[in-house]
Image 1 (tube, rainbow, N blue to C red):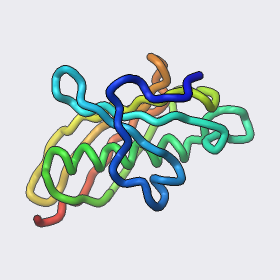
Image 2 (cartoon, rainbow, N blue to C red):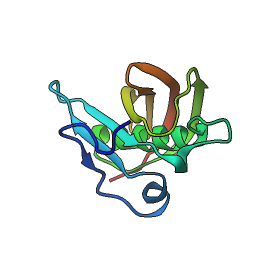
Image 3 (cartoon, helix red, strand yellow):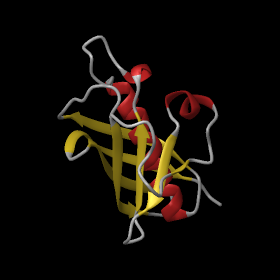
Image 4 (tube, one colour):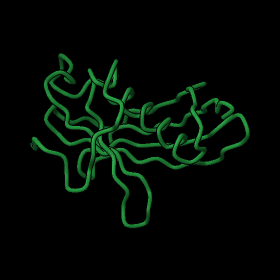
Length: 135
């Protein structure tokens, strides 16, 4: 269990609303210039089974997938569809890492994949489509 984010992570500029309640969420650029994401899970994120609630992880993934689209397209976006697969669990208190892969960005749509992990343990994979708005 950790109580601080790993070195180089900075909080999202946006901390209001649901992101503020569920987060804070963090991000940094890795040595290849790709964005990495994370959040410190705690008891708020747990479920009655003693593991992270799937909704907490999905909210994190939806947020970081959209953030990746904004970084790539330099325009705002909104989720159109979001598909997920739960493959692992972890107890609250873990640092959760998120990775994203932009598949395609067109004039009006973006296709992006992501995954959430605790250490090297895969928790959730996701694929999403985002509506990209005009500048």
